[in-house]
Image 1 (cartoon, rainbow, N blue to C red):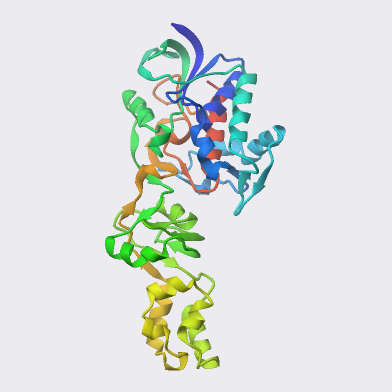
Image 2: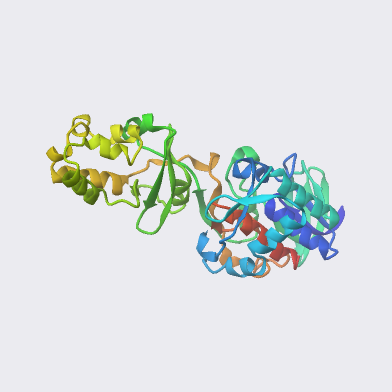
Length: 393
């Protein structure tokens, strides 16, 4: 049996960050993972360019049953700390929109940074290792049985992630460990995920597949303004993905397809100033032609503004500025970028990430009930939580 100071289960963003920090403290660290390569989700993130953090990180961009839990780690290891690490490794990057930072080249730059830092901190990574059994022998004494031998460690860190993208090896492993040790787990569901539609809406909107529009998407609790994308399965794009984390089954969303325009007032003004213009000409200056044709009666579209009744303007205005859409569901974990819910933060120290009832057991990253917005926030949570645990394990 190998005796190790720290065993970290999960060679993703949080696990590698924790390994680096613990290794710097001269702790003997081994990262174990069942996959064949570390950081698979890092490599595929951000369209292969890794949206590694955001200039605008605050606790407000995170969802948790305990909204205060994330504050300590985010304050102690900030986006600026990770940006400095990226600069130290001379990785070129750029801001895309809304503070989102991406590599100029490839996501591999971020993974290589983490692996090099692990190497310099003498933190070892062992892949193709499946965990068969975890036993707590006493405080700070754990026995881990794997397909590649047994380990004894003082500190055990669970960084196994959530359920998103099972093809990348996602599993409920971390939740099962929590339950084994009597730690509560909030029910999980897919977040930052495309929405599917009922058949009637799906058929109606099918020919809009591929069209993206600047929009304001809202429900009673939240709203986001970014692009919405029509797909052959339903709705996607940044605004929809963001709202999916705040959407509950059976609920309607409201989509404003022209957030800067009061359509009713615009049409009334156009009627006074350009009465001979066709309705479709005015609408065509504001929205893609296919969108107009799907949403409005062709006879009405070919009518001159002078002949359009104000009640028609109101219906058009409601459709464009306050389109009510009731999704059928989500595409699920297959395409979700994050898992909502997870290990109950009330059972974990927000400073050390140690389980309050199990000395020496830690949970970091996405396995916890903390989920960030789209735009680099989930990576920042991985860096911050991994760093914080790495100071004490």
